[in-house]
Amino acid sequence: MRLFDSFAGKISGIFEKLRRSGILRESDVDEALREIRIALLEADVSLSVAKKFVEDVKEKAIGQNVVKSTSPSQTITKIVHDHLVELLGKSTPLEINKKPYAVMVVGLQGAGKTTTVGKLASFFSKKSKKVVTTSTDIYRPAALDQLRVLSEKVEGTIFISAENNISKICESAQEAMKNENADILIVDTAGRLHIDELKMNELQEIHKIVNPDEIFLVLDVMTGQDALHIAGKFMEALPVSGVILTRTDGDARGGVALSMRALTGCEIKFLCTGEQLTDIESFDAEKVAGRLLGMGDIVSLVKKAQENFSQEDAEDIVKRMQEGIFTFDDLAEQIEKMSKLGGLKTILQMLPKSSQLENLMQTDGISDKTVRRNLAIIRAMTKKEKQNYKLLNGSRKKRIAAGSGTTIQEVNRLIKQYENSLDFFKKMKKSGFRKAMFSNIGQYENKIFR
Ligand SMILES: Nc1nc2c(ncn2[C@@H]2O[C@H](COP(=O)(O)OP(=O)(O)O)[C@@H](O)[C@H]2O)c(=O)[nH]1
Ligand SMILES: [Mg+2]
Image (tube, rainbow, N blue to C red):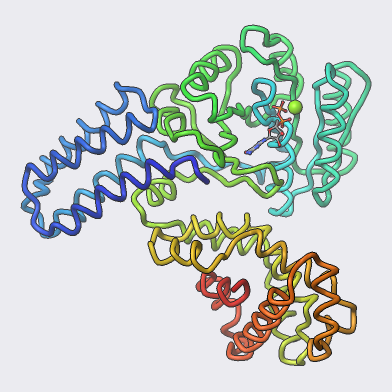
């Protein structure tokens, strides 16, 4: 997620400086607070919010007598962390175990509603929920197809459509919920390019029929401060229960996320980080605050890994390795799973900021491009070759390079990586596998991808 990158860089820089300086004077703290204020303003946080934030931190710092405390830089880091959590706002967990559970998704056209409905279906489906999706966007037939296609990609999710009548659509979906014994209903709605053109009464009608447990407002962070204005308008018309921010992978600054709670009172529920179905994460103020302060985000990485790798998968790999049948096909599958985690960039971003990792990315050319090329090489192999890499002689390598649009050097490098990962796996004891995979994912990555 790039949303907070620049802000996080500045904030963690400020604290690194404090940590390095050891003894803190009152003036050091003041200087840090001044820098935090500037960083907030540069992140597009409104002046009033930035001012209040710094004043609150200062008051707390004086109250706790930071300068005289045993570890001043830690104390001030903790204070700022806690205030960031408060600023971002903790969100109440969704009660998705309630059955039936219904969600309505609203927002302007192009904000990312339909994509988000697909992502939510995927998110709930991973929690073993059976989902029904439907769309009341009767004005654009393409919108219905878009949601149908997305829904088909999510296991166990059923897309329901009906004739061009909003109440009929909602009723059909509710009927399907019963007939299919489904858990969660997600209703997509029509948007408009501008808030003033929006048919609020239509949304209110849908709200009345569906009686959803949550109304999620989808906002594109690229719209900047305007998003706050849009949120205000929606909140006047509907009991919006949470905000979902999309395009956090773009180059928007973090202002919307940092000001949403303070200025609208509305909770942020999810962050969307790309166009793929898996590019969604629950919003966790503690985690974001940790990320902002350069504490990394191992927790969410591990969570994501656990969602995508099952215990059975892990055991299956171990078994195959022990039997000596971990093939290139298995490697390809592992690589694909890694890219499901959001690609290498995302994974590296979630790890604590460290120049070592950044250097690795730049100098060793670990990139999603390399991953794709490696997959192409594996796909260009014959079945026999995938099962027994020792068959790969010069002429076969040449054919594979030509077939995958890569070079012999790249083919050789992949074979070397494969041998390395065989080694790596062999060294792992069965019981330690899952632990090693999840707690040490960065290292695992390097073995697989280098
Ligand atoms: N990069 C990026 N693109 C997104 C994200 N969410 C949605 N999109 C894209 O935004 C465009 C509009 O999304 P759509 O769901 O059709 O918006 P709607 O009009 O609100 O239903 C599509 O091309 C999506 O792929 C996101 O989090 N990141
Ligand atoms: Mg749509």
